[in-house]
Length: 156
Image (spheres, rainbow, N blue to C red):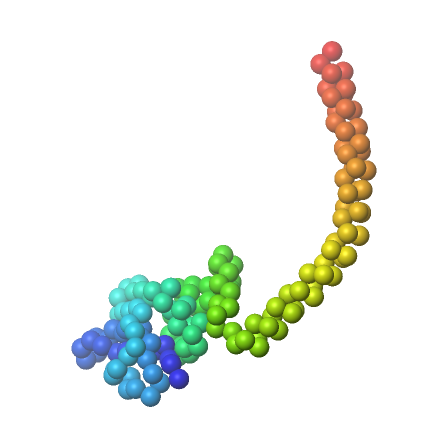
């Protein structure tokens, strides 16, 4: 299992941390896969730098953040972006090449069935929509004319 966790560095009683992606079986300060950020808790205010793109990449790949790292991700906004919070781009769809042949065939069949039903459902929905603006248009014009007549009377 891959974890996103803190790797302690620095002198005695002067710690700073790297945010790393590592195998859960490796030691805390041992081998890691990738360094994606740093955290300096003794600075005022604390320094938190995390490469958002790489962090989201590893989260999508299934890496599990430890509790302290998750808090850091939430503070920097990376966790919200990963979860799909406000202002986040939509994640790209999965590549079709990765799907098995059976899954591709099933997806193709599902896509064809709703396409055949869609025009039948859309036709009744369009008719009332086309009638509604025609009824509203004269109603909107009348108040505009009345307002212009009133303004003319006031100016005379």
